Length: 428
Image 1 (cartoon, rainbow, N blue to C red):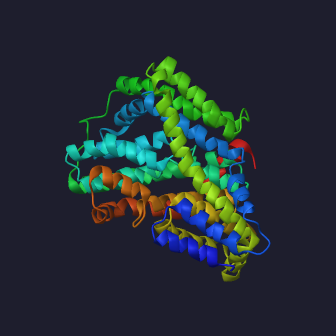
Image 2: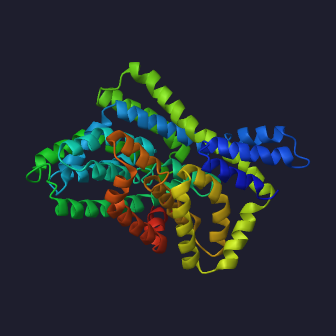
Image 3: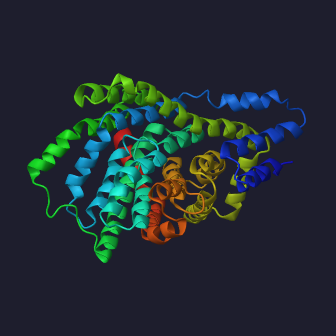
């Protein structure tokens, strides 16, 4: 009985049953056949997962992102990205990457980011002569940056499951997010040079025009500073930061940009409810499944097994990275994060690896799964919008994926890239 629910869950995944239902059915099977466990405990554990203060940050940041999209903030950030990098080779592709980085402080969802930029920039790239496969690949890969730069739903969930400060995780994600941006920009330059993709502008924008674009985007940029400064100085917790960001974004959109109207409120609420429900139903199912794993001591057994294989931190990280890359190709990132965090964190802490450092490694790794076949959600999103075959996406996207895996290895084996900034700003 120990491993039957886990095997059932993976069998359901193979049959293409939705992840939340697969986990819930597998967990239910354990309660049905286990001795001495009434079925009502399944319901209790399913619902109990929602009783968490840190998880309140999820709907708040999703709502804030929806408000910003309707307040003209995204358009202003695109204008700023264009002013910064439009003169570079492959200018519109470079702007795609920079916009995803700027949106990292405003949108917590990589899938929403991929959809938005595929419609806004992907179609424009194709119109300007870029191959549809390249446009889909760079848009999906750029969306990987969004949940790494704070706030990110993956960071919130990891912090909740591992008892690591979400505020420190937010600040720890800044350098890895910027490294991913640089890596993708270098790759775009190389590919664009090779294919003859032109810049959007003949020369750099004058400082006056750049200053105008910066001032126009200042409302959006101030939101990022608002979140980080508030957390750094203890003005509010990361969860409270989500609520404050909703209010702040609404004020910016209403009184500064004057584009946010009360008529948009029902649609904003609907988008927030639907997006939050998709995340929370997985968390609820994982809560019930997590009870089964704890009851059968599967996380402890997994940690003991990994420690028996090696006690060398560098080798353990390599093995975990390879395993996560494979798992990320097969299971959606949020579900994999929920399932694996309780197993892997005890193992890495036993060999002296900082759980803060490991959290960024894990979240980056599993987010990369969103652009790798066969089940990459960002890959499917951009391919469906731009009408690109998966084979074409894989062929066009390998240079971008390679650059991101190089960054992953860099943050894996240089922990200071993750831990230095939180230590500097928030203390040890």
